[in-house]
Image (tube, rainbow, N blue to C red; front, side, top):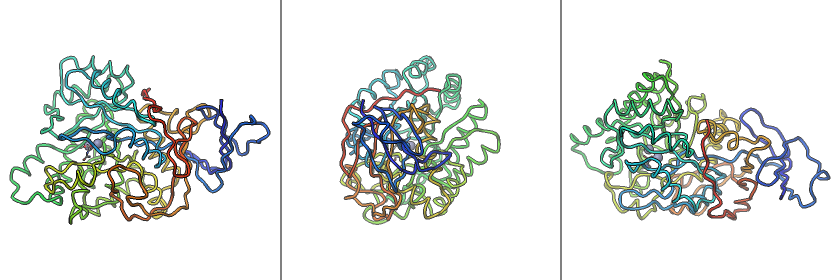
Length: 455
Ligand code: URP
Ligand code: ZN
Ligand code: ZN
């Protein structure tokens, strides 16, 4: 069994940071100690000098859509491309989604698992539930046995058939999930409000109009709605990609009422504003929910620092420049942007510039937090002895500029083009195997493992 000694790095966990050595044996972490003597190791041990580098548990992007087939096309980053760009971003696990075929959740899951076989990094799945049916609890039991830990619910996208419209039916799905110990994650935008705004809309449909057609009020209303169901059923709820101050206020209100609300946000809602939607490249920045105002960025940043947000993920859903720019009508622009690769450098830079987010907090938001919430911990999200040797070596001092040539998405652009960031991933290990080092990708298609959630 091969051994690797990562020597003298700054090992960062959610509780502590200290200069340490880490010994990897095969796919697992074998020892973590202030100094591991070379002489005690097998002669073929590879030694990696990590002086000046941070040693982090592999980053988890807890919200991705690789190879999303949508609106008659498919996203630019399929499983091979997604794995590759993830490795460059220090990401060793993603949580992606299985669509609901509306007749069998288990068949839906099996289909997605089969599609994802080419993955070169590890992955878990959330299961979409888009329709109530009488025996859905049995279906949920079967996907739970197959390793699903969370459902994905939409409060919008009625037009594409994702919305469970009837409150009692939705409540029944929530109740079954609660009884089975499945987390319910929700995309929150109130469909009725969005429909009523668009039916009385006399404006244009430029990219910038996307923001007004899907306002923050719609997010807040949907959060109140699903939070109300969670309160009645005394169960937690997880809000994906929180985008607005109003949405955050709705979360705060629910929490004051005793509801356990977990919140995920994304770098684009933290750092980009709707001004990006103006101008020729506006379509590149269309995603749902839309980009908002500076004050929304600031409210979410403050919430991140204060511990009101548990996860930062990316909602990576990449279309090429050509796909995005093929329409400038916000109703038909393919929604979504890439982001997995930029996740760690962006959040690290924010931590440095604000001076209010420690490396340990970053590890919690980008690795340990999602691993715990989705039943992947401690195998993922930790550097404990005996767990998977998913390790990201990160140079915290390296300054660079994000642009299409420094990142690897097949989208051919980054929404953070021109951002100066501090911190760069130099090596990524997946289960003890180097999958990216010295800017060279070494991932093996098919080597990614489907991760079963455990509660
Ligand atoms: O525009 C987005 N976010 N596309 C991905 C699907 C979703 O709603 O999360
Ligand atoms: Zn969504
Ligand atoms: Zn999404």
